[in-house]
Image (tube, rainbow, N blue to C red; front, side, top):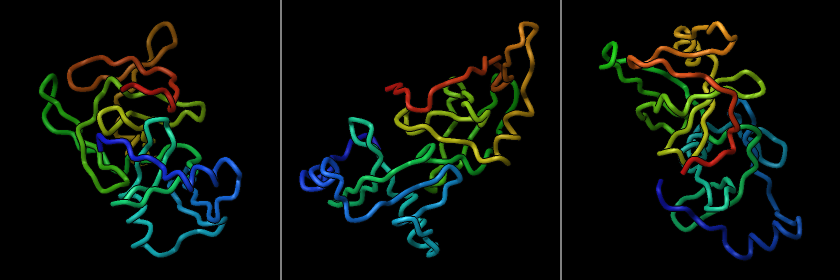
Length: 173
């Protein structure tokens, strides 16, 4: 996912005019909607989850082959659905399962929390934010430590990582 797809010109024009024929929406819980109606077909949901990408200017899209269509995202385009720890101390590695079906090693330096106190990280080499679903966040937050100054840190991979409030839209690439 290193390439940035581009929205076709005719769709860009419809976006500017406010005349897109269909709205595809991903809510903060990872549920997909089409013109306000929830998608129920698991194969379509899985296809959408696997087809999420972002344009160079930050517009989230469904991108597959030559098809690129803008989507509205309430919180983040991806979700952490599972966490696995391997090793211990400085040899520890943390792997996260994502809503797109991929598994990647967590970059612990990208962890942050949002206004809603949910846990987030950057994924896809920093290209996109991902929100931890409740259960996976508990595995990480078991390592939460409160500092004397009232701030918080996490003890992960043999390091103490300061947990800061962040902006999910902040680009780090």
